[in-house]
Length: 184
Image (cartoon, rainbow, N blue to C red; front, side):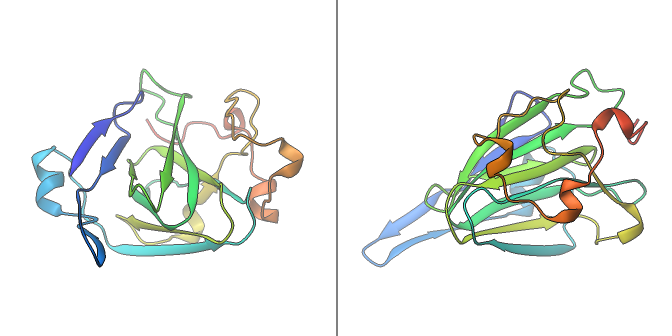
């Protein structure tokens, strides 16, 4: 597995090795020993999966507040997304910055989003299925987020705001500047 730090070095792009033959291919999507070799200390406790039917479905930017913060390992099983992580750690030199990567089922790319980051994605294909592991279970009282079009973040999702498909919950998320200190 190739593991590459992105512009925000705690966010990692993973590329599992694929072994192909006439039947198709096989890949190992997660390996604890590979994470350990790269000094990534995480124990996943839950797997999640979402189906987003229309192109332009945006899920995020989500995170859980401490003490229930989550690290995530995100991959696409069907389709393609543009996946984004926003640094919410006040003591970080990259606080308030974001990084994005295209994840596709065909390419097998994965994004590791550590605790202290908001996470979201927008679909590029219809009927996209996203799978992700988390290292803490869902805690409704800690559930939070940042509005996708926060003018201070200026994330380029690749579509005009009016073409983005959002849930009511995601459309009502606050700006990052209204969160206060979430992560030290």
